[in-house]
Each structure stands twice: as C-alpha cells, then as structure tokens.
Image (cartoon, rainbow, N blue to C red; front, top):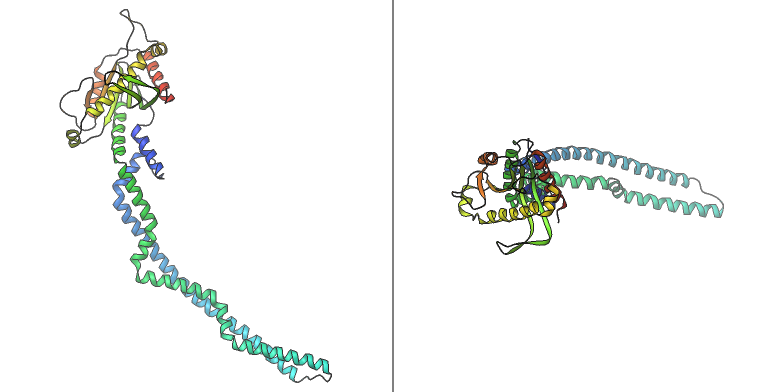
Length: 362
C-alpha cells in the first residue's frame, strides 16, 4: 500500500473555514456532506422535537397550576387561622384587663396605656385581616400568574410557542448551512482529492504520496519563461515512485464546467510547481542530499511528470508538458512508466521533499 503523508489541502482549508466560523461539530467530510444533504430533515426534526418539548411543558404547567392552587388555599387557611388566633388572644387579654382595675395611680396609668395599645393592635389586625392573608400568599399568586399566562399562551398560540422555543437552534443550523454552502468549492475539492488519494493508495509501498505540499520562499524565484516571480507553491499531491515524481492536481469539475472553464489556469499552475520542484531536486543542494546513484553516461536527473486528474471526465485534446486524465485512468498512467530509481533512492527523494514541506518557508 502506498505510504501517505499529510491531510489533503481542501479538507484542511474546509476545516479551517468551519473553525473560523465557530463550527466544531463535524469530525469528517462525510459528516459535513450528510448535514448538507439532511438539512431539510434536520430542520423538520427540530420542529418535531420542540413540539414535543412544548407539549411536555404544557402538561407540567397544568400539574404545577393544580399544585399551586392547592398550596395557595392551604397557605391562605393557615394565615387566616393564625390571624384569628392572634385576634382572639388580644380580645381575651383586653377582657381580662377590664375586670382587673388597679387602685394605685401609676399601675392604673400603665394598665390604661397597655389597654389602649392592645385595642389599637386589635383594630389594626381586624382591618388588615384580608391584606395580611393576601400577603402570606402573594409570592405563590405571582408564580401562579406567570405560569397561568404561559399555559394560556401555549394553549392558544402553540405554533408560535414552538417557533420561539426552536428559534436559537433553528438560527444555528441555518447559520451552519449557510457557512457550509459557502464552502462548496472546498467540499467538492476535498471529495475529489479523497478519491485520488484512495486510488493511489492501491500502489505498492515503494510509492510515497505527499498531500498538500505547500511552501513559501524567503526570496521569490524568477520564472524566466513567464517573466514572473514565484513566492509560493501549493501542490495537491506529489507522488514519488520508482519511475520518478508525479505532480498531481485534482479538479472535481462537471462536464459543463469543463466546457465553460479555461484550463489554462490549472495547467499553468502545475507547470510553475513543476519548475520549482525540478530546481530544488536537481540543484547542487538537492544532488548532495539525494546522492542518487551514478550512471556511466552521467548524473541522473529526476523525472517530473505533471498530471491533472479530472474526477469524472476530461476535455478532448492534449496539453504541452501536462497530462490530463480521469480518475479511472490515473493508475494506468502511473504504472505505464518504467522504474528508474532504486527503492533507497525513491525513499531519499521522498524524505527530502517531506523535509522541505515541513519547513514551510525556505
């Protein structure tokens, strides 16, 4: 089985895009696609879930209201009994005081003051009886009113109650759907790259596959052919094998897209990447690190083949320096070439490229 390194680029970009939008639910591309495809069902299920929750809330409110009614009546009775007992105690104290009149002036004055105070207390308690009873049940009545209002709202505006209950979750799944829809290019790209990786993994362990080869240069490299300076290179896949190196760009395009899109962009992209890779592998530094075996004709050069893989179909015609194949043609194209490197040489090339990729900036 082909030795594979790094996560595919489109998948890494998709993951970063989701995390930047505070979406951490999905652990795989499959889960993202399942969410996208199941969105209408998820939304419908969300409503059904909240309908059930609101119905359960209504039933609990009904039970709570019945219990509150009982508690209010009980608390009211206890308050009435307590206040009645207090009133009777005051009346009894006043009656006892009437029958007991002190002869001395000072005790009589004290008794009159006490009697006046008790009569005032009695009058206040009798006047405030209903208010004191209500005060004892006020908190329970307020709770009862809030619950009754909620119960009446659910009973008369059930659908609105469900929508309000589901609003936060509803808004969140709509937001996720929007972010994922904006990521369609990444998703299609990741699907295509995954298919390419799976196809190449069928190769033997003499092959090394580096996904998302991405490096930036401290000093831009001049591309004489196109009169431009190249500051960075990103390659979907680099396949290293006995027959050389394959730079592979994946395009998951429909037939209609292929007819409408200009293929010059991916062709130029892969040719620029090939130029940079060729310079790195065949300069003095590359030759020193790779130490490829000598041939009696001279030093070996590393063969680089440029491949664009179109997942479903490809355009008619050929392109200079770039081979365009479908996914089904990919393995046949790779296996077509004869070995030119030993197993050790292939491994050294792979390790050299992995080291460059790990540095990110060179």
